[in-house]
Image 1 (tube, rainbow, N blue to C red):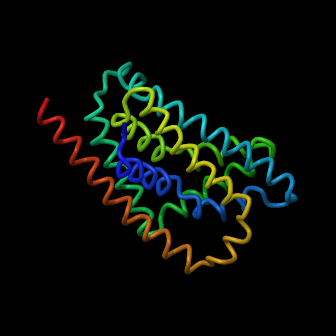
Image 2 (cartoon, rainbow, N blue to C red; image 1 turned 90 degrees about the horizontal axis):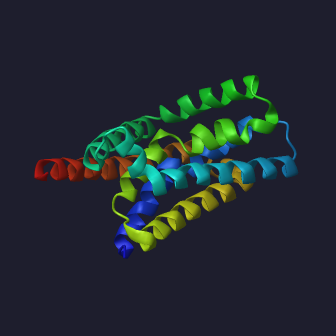
Length: 209
């Protein structure tokens, strides 16, 4: 059974990687022109699709890797580097610019009813960082109890994301540009430390095998 410390670390890792506060202004951007009811429908659909995608990798991530002959320690090292790159972007505020570009492309090319799936669910919620973090975490959650614990963590993160979407206008107004910048940098530093730990654990496992 996972410890409270491991559960908390997993929760923080996923929540920071998904970055709900950073998604709030992007949600407002891609749903521009919609009324409150339409935005609620988009937020529900995006959260459900995001949960299903991340949950798939939580349950079958190891099997998917084995098909390509990739070991979990090797993926832990690679995923750790990827998370560190995301943390670097967060600290230096490059990730937000990249996400805004994804949002702008989608709103011009995709029908408005499909924006819940793209770009909100994929890749803004269930992006490479969140998927990598989930596969890395799944290696530490064995058995039915462990998988259910990880799925509960994913569900909690997506519920928070859904609430952020519902309160997007208010959150964006409260945080402002300065508040978003400070919060993003702080979360980036935390993610960087977690990424280094992933790499260290992966190297240790590879050296011991």
